Image 1: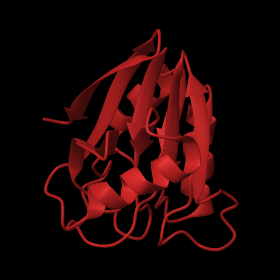
Image 2: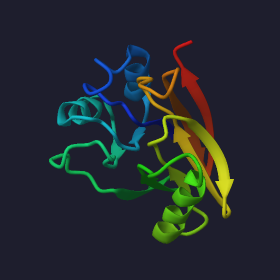
Image 3: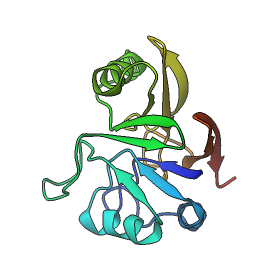
Image 4: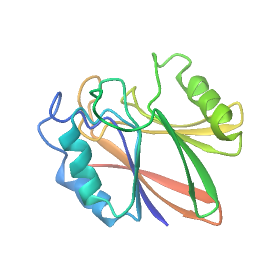
Length: 164
């Protein structure tokens, strides 16, 4: 299964639109996972409209009327993903996300989070934690990034994609 993993689109608060290259990958994906900070209901609906299948969570800047959970769990081709936005500073971030994953689904699950606008693929407390960065490059990020990946037989491989 082909995944598009993104976060922190921040449209319209910090960016005018989602880049075309991001939209193209979202449209191609079998499943789109968004780790929050859409910034508006219109951005959420736009991504949902582009996606074949969609899983998303709310972020810290999302308005209250975005009706998404703070944590969601999805099973994909034998892999379990726990999606959350994440909180706090970079210091301790991966451990905090890993603990959320452990609490929600155990150590065998993979965490997908956003919030820090930084690409992460690290292991903490035995949990793989992914952060695709920010799809629109608002501060403090310099580059718009996302992840694409495939899941087969419970195994995930991911690549970081950017415009450049």
